[in-house]
Length: 315
Image (cartoon, rainbow, N blue to C red; front, top):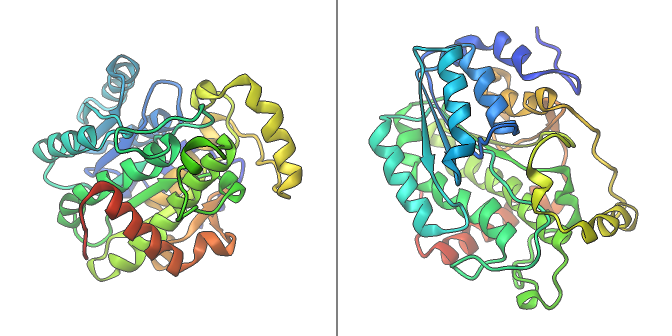
């Protein structure tokens, strides 16, 4: 019986569930060296998966991760696939490339994210954090769905969210903050992280009959990654005040090793089979605010996301 919690490290999770890794195919977005995605990949490599595909914008930042995976597990096929999640065209190209490399995907980890940038729009005219953190993953996941279904009952989709989702629900009628006029980068980040949770809720319902499961999670407050590299320094005092204003508790600090654990539990733990759609914190299911758990909101987000990417996905 496992007893995972806040101090659990990713290696312990993989050690407990190595049979869920061996011979399987994993796709991870946002796996640059030093980040959570990279450490998740290293942990998985120890149990000898068949294939690990690492999707990211910068091959130079991912190639060292590919090399380390191959050192840990020479039998594992590790490969970089270029993608810019803020561009639907890039996402479509990446999905097509993935489809030529693998016959199935056992676990898709939507880990990539940006946080705290100044206001800007994606090529599809979507606020950048909502676009990269949610819309890009929405499109990628749905385009890869045939490969997830090909893995059979038990394949999983893991969406890395954050407890900072509490900063904002999805602003269905104004997700671009009046084209920047009312923009608050932390509320925009919160909106995108709420979207990650609602996406898992929608996927869980839509894919239940196919045996594909989905989860979202908070990895922890991890300072040793590049996530904060896009934050304007002037924004730090603003977010500090927002914790009090919005009555949000500061997430507990974790190391990268600890930060990978909840992602790996979501990807591997068989005990979660009966709670598809759950949000995890400290390696266990946790409650979310109503706006992030509402099936009505999940369906509204799905419809909005389809409208933005210009394609419908029915399951």
